[in-house]
Length: 111
Figure 1 (cartoon, rainbow, N blue to C red):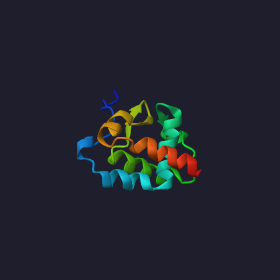
Figure 2: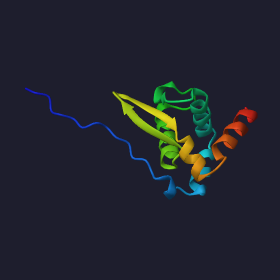
Figure 3: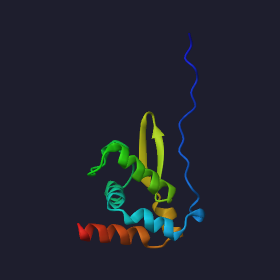
Figure 4: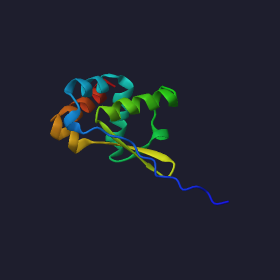
């Protein structure tokens, strides 16, 4: 019996023109989400969901990724069975100039 064809998994991302400053700030207000953003900044590219060092469970971290994605901060996509995360740096800079660098600098100074 032949295996049924499957369609590639996709993840929905908002247009940044639809994201409000309030939504972006609320996403970045949580310390775990700031940790994710800082780790992505240090990585300088993509990181798999399972490679983040955070003090929360995998299911809670999944929630944090969803909040960041829905606020336009990160982009997620699948490569095989791995979900990869990256910052939408250029897009965020165009929409909210200086926001991500300021948050990362402040978070790293605070740590």
